[in-house]
Each structure stands twice: as C-alpha cells, then as structure tokens.
Image (cartoon, rainbow, N blue to C red; front, side):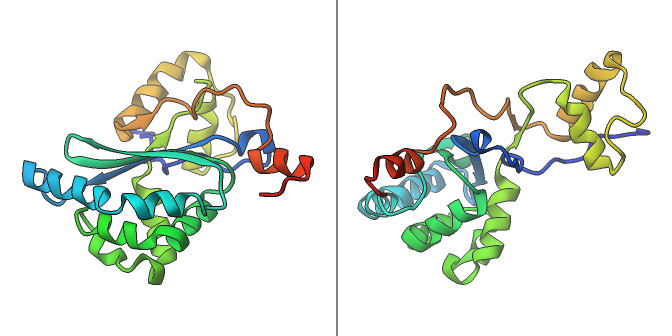
Amino acid sequence: MKAPAPKMPGGPRETQQNSENVQRMMNLVMPLKDSSSIGRAKAALAIAQNVDEIFAGLDNVGTVHFARFLILGDNLCMISVYDGDFSNYIRDFIITIGSVFDDVMTVVEGGDEMIPTAHNIEKFIDWVHAHDLFQAPDYPTDVFELLDEARGVSKDSPPHDLKTLPRELILLLHANPDLSLGGGYRAYPGYSAAQVRGKFGVGW
C-alpha cells in the first residue's frame, strides 16, 4: 500500500537501438460489445467480410509485419509483429485498411468513438496503445528501472535490494494482470527487410 505498482502502458518501450526496433510485438486486446455467440459471430464476420481488402492493404503497408486476429474469451485480439515505430505502424494501417478497422470498431466496446478512424487518427492510436498488453521486461531486474520511472523517482536511487524483486514483481502483476511475457524471442540480425533490400539496390 505504501508503494503500489502503477498500471503500465501497453506495447514495446521506446528505444534508440536499431536492433531493438525490429520484430516488435503488438498484442491488441479489444473487448467485445456482445460476448455472446452472436456477438462473437459478428466479430468473425467483420474480419471475414474484409479478407480481400486486408490482404491487398497489408501488401501496401510500409512496414514489415505479420498479423493475425483471434477471438479469446470476450475479446477480439490482433496479434502482430512489426518493424519500426508504433505510431507510424498504426497510421499505415489506417491509410491502407482504415475501413476494415471501422467495421471492427463497430463490434468493440468504446469503438464507436473512433469511427471513422481516418478522421480520428491520434485518438485511435491512443486507444490501440491503451489496449495493447503491457510487455514485461525480458530481464526481471529491469522491473526496478520501469517502476522507478513510473513512480517518478531517480533510477536506482536509493539502490535496490535484489531481495525485494519478488515483491516488486507481485505488485507489478497485481496492477497489470494481463501482460506479455517479454518483448518476444527472436533470432534476427538487427536489420529490417527494407534495409536489407535497400543495400541490395532492390528497393522496397
């Protein structure tokens, strides 16, 4: 109670390292307005009716990525892996397949406020960020740095005692019950496919 862990923002954290800006994870969890079988069918239909547009649009998104939609419990989820900046990634989606997201938003709680997404770009980006799962750090001791930043205190001041790490992890999980364990495991050379193609002179 004296030092509770805060609700953490979703998605990957900003980094200046190029090798950390490839194969980034998005775990978008969108609660359904209607979680009955009918509501779930409407969610599936919103995706199925737009399959051709999704495939055509994804070929034109200027970001290397892989994505899939899932219905898990009472949620429609979009799980994706992408290169580069989160906000630009979402903007690319709105430009190429914004109408698909307009249909998806009709079956999602709070989604009506985002329609049309092309006219609510920043609001939609903030909404996606808020519904993207918090990604726990790959290394447990990085929890200290995350919590220091969230609590507005200087990094490692006073120095943290490793014996308090289990307690901090429990507090973090209490405030963030749904999370992604780490930023994803990958074996990648640190260059996007676009950079590799550029070096070969192939273009994008």
